[in-house]
Image (cartoon, rainbow, N blue to C red; front, side, top):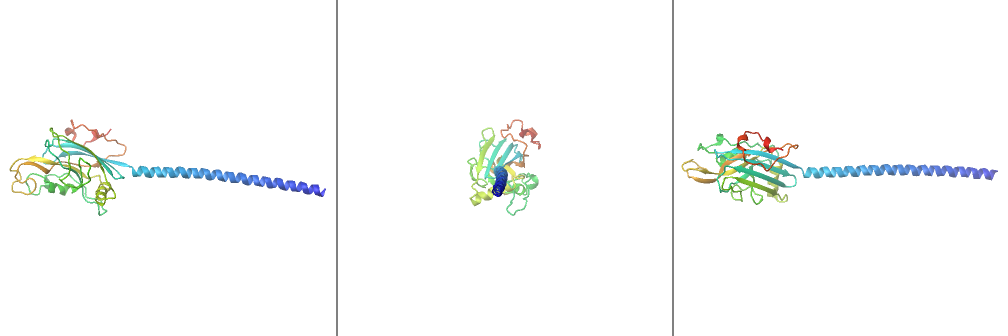
Length: 275
């Protein structure tokens, strides 16, 4: 009887031990499932964080301006500038009313941001900036309103801040100018990095300016600057300018803007640019 009781007790103990082991196995499986689910969530979150980081790095900002005449040039136009954080700036520029068959130096201008402070915003150079009172706002005078050259809008995509000596766009026989160019910055090059940072940090409020205007003999005689009494084509003389403004994220910009009928809406209404 004792042996039987012992065997019976041993059997009970084995059964309890098996139940305990099964429970431990079940708990272990449950914990493993929870960890797998957590790992899945972590992987998903990591992928989302990585995607968000990529989106931020490849975020493209768009800026637009309507170009209005300087020095009674009659020049009008449109400029659209896009910038991403990877060192790429694309410019679409269209203008009409320019001196035909001439090269027209074109730039993005602005004031320095290297001191870490918000820069002075560019403003249109009116006759108030005509310091020598010759009736023209010359290049050095306009610079007081819009700041120095940051980026030259070259036709070959070369990165430079040259004022005149670069490959600039040329107006056709009708005085129309078209430029579509992407500028790819080498961010390991100190000079190119400096130019890009000036644009990246503060492109809103910068100015796009076109130069090149023909003047008659006698204008500005006795004064310094490009208008000095001698007539002819003055490639440095400002012809048109516009202040860049950022486009809201929910708007798209139609960069293939026809210049037909643009002049009448150059009163600050840029709705025709958005689709």
